[in-house]
Length: 360
Image (tube, rainbow, N blue to C red):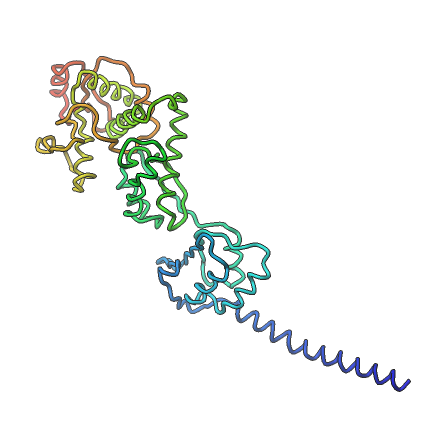
């Protein structure tokens, strides 16, 4: 009996010991958990581009999780930049969480706890920037737009748009993607690969083309290229949608008789995008004499390539031009954007006596 009582007392003592340890350990563990999980509130972050972490003027942090990167690697970067207090606590979260962090760019509105940061990276809900590329944009203008939105640099975008591997993927008979990157509204994360930006825009272009004319697949790359060139010029010329197809018809009429297209838009392209000069307030006589193959006042036929990214109206006009016997057009009213179309040079000159804008 005494032996049993002795064993019982030992068990009681052991349980008391365990409970005592637990009463001590739980607050300690809880305190440690709260301490390491708690965010920094002093905002003294050590941000470096090498760590793939950027801070904007509004204070928001943008974290890039690289493709194939582990949670442990992300934790090292977060600790190094003082966004979290302890990498080991971060690693523990990685073991407890069933889901893995996902690659992408994430917005962190600090201060955040480690658990909150981890859940953001597990969610896969990346920060996407809305970028609208206007119709008639050139590669240089697009590049500047994407750099302004921190998606990719000007140089990276232009390099990708001139990458022959990508150009050959789409069977484009040119040295750049000019004209084949569809003007639209896009959503991309920060620091997105420029090659993927270009491919997304080119994919959009070819999908749109199928909506314009399903027979596009029957065209040779060169035939399509010529239509894109015409569309790119029409895009920079028309102001009223219903006149786009008439203008396209004028350009096709001129080509049939080996007459110069005589488009001021091509001269503007030479000045701004080839020579890198400011946009001219008006086209002078000296501008019309610039010796460049894109200058359609000096060279007959199509220029070497597109001069902008045409939208749906210009592309449809190029595919389905209005058949007329017009060879000239002149801006009649700058406010309405309406043009006067003429059959002969004499009619064109007479129209100029009424209006004084630049002729086409």
